Length: 162
Length: 201
Image (cartoon, chains in turn red, green):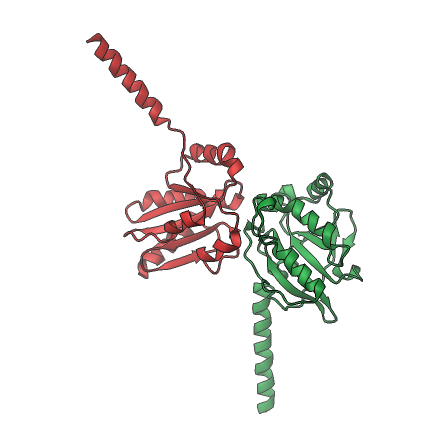
């Protein structure tokens, strides 16, 4: 019986340390990111290209988190980070942890920008942040930043005009 | 009367197109505006100062954008290679320094000294030049060819095809374009998409 108790405590400890899982980044070249721009599910996908060193990106990031929270049934937010590999450990992971990001974060590491920027959207000139709102039948591209109100209003318009 | 209306229509259309192109900036073949911007040494620099230039490699860049920083050495190398051949690099810092204090004139001077820049590093202090070119980010390159009509835009976009590692570059867009211009031959790639940090207002 005593042993069982010890075992339970040990298991508990093991579980607790599990909860503090180190963040595992999902890093892709553009071929690996492309499927996230073409998801065929029933939700509306909001894809934001950002980086921790990009001030306007960081400023608007909480709005995407709030949107994910408020529309969790109908929307999936995907945050595509363009952080440089040498800053994954020093900047990106601590940022995800600090702000406790709930949206899915994927990392795009593909230096041949001219090959993939036009594939995200022909209108994109390469400056970040940019945002895609799309679903199975419709797709909009935004080369601008958002307040929460603006983002929500874009989403509502997107839903209305389906 | 008919003629007057026609002229008026033509004029209006021209004005409309002109405004449109101003908003979007230059396309290939446009005549680029000259400017008079303050350099890090305190003197003003204009394209017209370079009497013998066959053209220019105009680079909108800054201290604070990681992509711009990744390209600093390559921009300096471009100037070393092409200034003597008649295509000097002219760097212009387009950001609002109130938003980005790390791009202040003082910070530009320090960075240029650290990196040993040999090209003019100018500040678009009232942010009036970059919108005319249509620059949207740093780094953003415009290659201009000097002609009797003025500096003609011949290339817009990225320096090469690898922002991360100069050693892994396969295509040097800017060098290819300038080499072709120097040799007076046609070249394929006049426009590329470059990743960059949005210009800070």
